[in-house]
Image: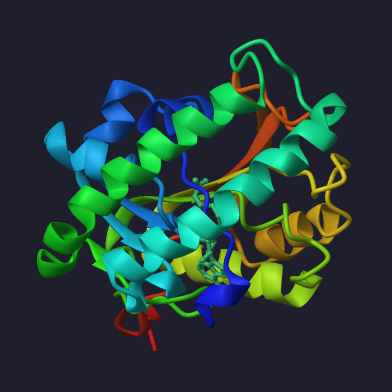
Length: 235
Ligand SMILES: C[S@@+](CC[C@H](N)C(=O)[O-])C[C@H]1O[C@@H](n2cnc3c(N)ncnc32)[C@H](O)[C@@H]1O
């Protein structure tokens, strides 16, 4: 992945808690963040004693390279937020500048943790739909602002493959939001849910408290089916 094609934008642990309805018990689980990018979720949760690993194709770049890319895109994103302000709910964040300072603080936390986290194997360069992990290595896999949001860039089959892979490596999967950039429910959602159910998983759409993009009120929670153990077939 070319860094020039990436728009790094990272959220905080508080935002992850609200987007995924994470309770204290969830945060004690062994967690995988898919597409965490420059979010401070991993840095903050690790500092609080949590067990978390993040995967993202941008982790092939150095902290300095990611910092420079953030500085390039930051004014562009803020100008875009100001232009499209009517597509957001301004209760938690008061204005685009408030979003910018909050996201920049999260991204700075990520950048200072990143070299240490790379050494510790907490940041892993990988991309959906292929995760370099064993079946059920994690209790919970999360995906924020990638699947469904980029429904125009990622087709239905890519969504299904990504979610089946997350279900393979984790007992439970949560994805937020379920709307595309246009604020409408992703056209892929119904068939993705059907494909997950056909594979034996238990998908459910659940309302969460997080509010920012209009229309983004729900997460997808999937309780994954136990993997088939070939020794247990009775043959
Ligand atoms: C909009 S950012 C969201 C970052 C973070 N999850 C958050 O909510 O703050 C989307 C992230 O998805 C990553 N990404 C793009 N394609 C991916 C893939 N195939 N697998 C995993 N991550 C991917 C990008 O590099 C980027 O960091």
